[in-house]
Length: 533
Image (cartoon, rainbow, N blue to C red; front, side, top):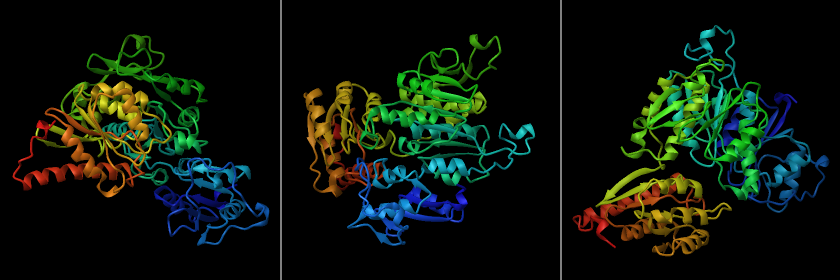
């Protein structure tokens, strides 16, 4: 059915839902918004749980009801309202916070009503690019440039950094680019902007689950580790959702040579004829891959045409580790930073970006807040905010960047169905001590007891949410010694005690500043927290 005749239900009325609804108004026959918390949504339903019932409990057959009136609140009979919504819908566009088990989405699928993500809608509504003279297609004299290609990134960790690196590289090449999707501007808005040459798109497993026709120019899965299992139900289902990013890829599927599951997802994908697999790793690359030779980032995938006989015996230099030193405080960049840079470089090269732009873009890149972000030093102790480390895999990468036995680890939050045994077992050697926050501390506290029983662990009472981080920082300061780092790398989601990982990181930084202010008020008597044991 053409969108102009479709009755659309928008499930979720947060940032994504509002952007979707704004675009659909005037393009669809009707738009009904549904949310649990937004007072201005057309219909209020209970918040979707991560694991919901198999089907809604409708009291009225769908064929016998009409769409609910705006302002409807589902209190006593949510099943009836769900049935009315589905009966009056030709399409449901689901926000990322709505898991497949949500009664509305279950009922829609059962009734044969398509369920799309914002990504699917954006793909179908893309507009042609306006000529800029910089796009690779622009110089060919095309009368119609077509929509901006998408370079898509997903994975458990590193997505935002990689997408922002990619955007920096594309801009260094003179392209009109934007980092969009799960970061920055909503993709539905960017897809309708004719002034963009190419989009660097961050995609979550939530967004990919209900995406059906997207065909990225190139796509990367950075890594796969247990995460969001409460939403997806299993690791296999989570990985399958990530793997959807490779479907219909036109030029290159970029995968992590250190993570075999990502290569398996490439092998399982149905891609365009001629699309190739390109591996990346912080080590020597094989033919057709990108990698690291000594301190040089090299390209053995896009440096020469496929039929060139010199191709297998040569490579193009993309940059050096020195181009990434500013991301490691002037030191040697950690392996995961190098891997992210290589993935971004591969995607950019798939789009035709010259090697010099990779180097220039990496040099110009600065990471966003809450990612291995130095906050301050108190005496000889550094305080670092990595609040975006919202799962065990990300926290492991964060901890790996510090010397053995020097980290006072502030961690905890929503586990999202994961456990922390492997994380603690493999990173216990980095820890001086741990400070555990979060409403449910048992998963992390138990792992620390089993695998790091020799270190002190302080549990922060979750009762007063407003002072949790202040108390955590004070406890961590008391445990730190000269040369240590107090690291916030929670390994869990933030929503049990904070509105977002950004709010959690900001609270950590504010608590550190409060410690400094108190010292200043006392004449600096307590500076040199590293002397405390």
